[in-house]
Amino acid sequence: MEEIVNKVANSALEVFDLEDYYPKGDRLRVDIAQWLYEGIILREKDFRESLKNHDWTQYRDAYVAVYCSNDAIVPAWAAVLVTIQLAPFAKKVIEGNLEAIDTAIYQEILENLDYSVYKDKPLIIKGCSRKPVPMSAYVLAAQKLQPFAKSIMYGEACSAVPLYKRKQ
Image 1 (cartoon, rainbow, N blue to C red):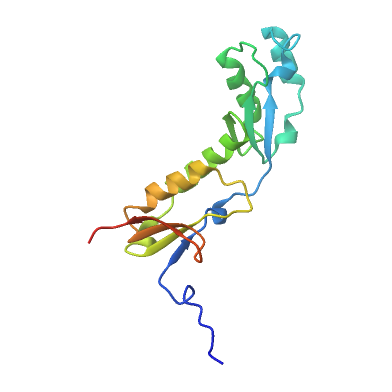
Image 2 (image 1 turned 120 degrees about the horizontal axis):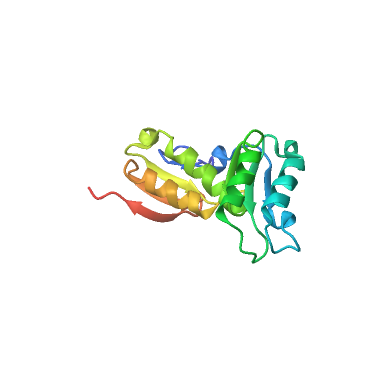
């Protein structure tokens, strides 16, 4: 019987897995609507008082998205004021939804990586993930990797889709 050889393991193919960079920490949301009068009107004095009495410690070491769940017209400073309250506790605060949190986190992480380790190498951006890696992270990773990689594929080694091959 002939020995089975793992050609993928023996190849020069490098795997770039965005899950490796997924930071630990809760992703939480703060809805400004909870502090609006009748759910639609921001009364500054009441709003400030509600923020002052809110337990901000529950957001300790979390990534927090500040948003408003209804169509109320909320002044821009409201989200900024909520952010100021969160800042001493949260790892990061963004305006938007939960996906926007991961987008912001990945943007920060991917901007600071050293991609030179992938210089002139065939590369696969691992596609299947168990963590909520946003599509924007794949898009940014491809842009950052392209100047270095010899080629870029997407997916798994057994069924990768070719995306880029540097011209010789």
